[in-house]
Amino acid sequence: MFDIALVLAGFLVGIVVGLTGVGGGSLMTPLLIFVFGVKPYMAVGTDLLFAAFTKLGGTVKMARTGLVPWRVVLHLSAGSIPAALLTLWALKTIGPADPAVQHLMTSTLGVALLLTAAATLFKALRGKAAPKSIAAGQEAQAFSARHWSLPLLFGAVIGTLVSLTSVGAGAIGVTVLMLLYPMLPLPRIVAADIAYAVPLTLVAGLGHASLGSVDWPMLGLLLAGSLPGIWLGSHYMTRVPERVIRALLSVLLAYAGTKLIAI
Image (cartoon, rainbow, N blue to C red; front, side):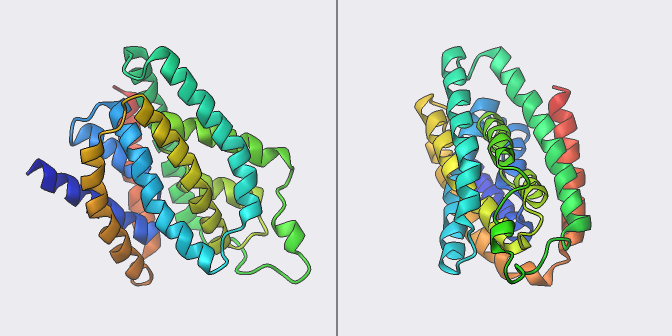
């Protein structure tokens, strides 16, 4: 029954990700902690590789259609991956199972979920604000941030958050991209967010695996459910009122974030 419950959890999270684009870490990590009783460090490490494998398929699909703005992905990765490596080094030095680290993970995860809830609600209310296409002659401006240092800075913040909590490369990342690249169309923003999350979550996930913070059998069961779930959610994405789902998700994430902070 436990195995079936994990497959079902992966399936449900996959559907939600496919329908809304909200990062799986925002849902899967608190689900593993509260429902399945998984230790925070093990939930974070397993979920990072869960996110890497599930988002890889989306990146390949979007890259084939030419949606991925690789220049934006490179700029964000230049800040996020070094920050992830530094965070992993700190975790290795202290020990991921240390009680102080566990408390830091749950508190940071709670804050990250509250930020994700706010970002999800923002997308629900303002999701159509981004331009639908790049105007002629404005390609260079669209792919340039407000300032060259901002993608590195925000990338570093997200890289640290993701390595500690597995949350940050989803709704938070999309909101940051909308602020940094206001002339970039929404489909390209989503494509950039998914694409740069793959190397980030892969590096962070493999780093956690080297620390013994990944439950491989559990990862396999979650992926067995999530992969068909994501396909199903993506298939019905245009038939479901996305804003209503995002608004409900923001309430759920805010509740989970508050509960984690109170631990």
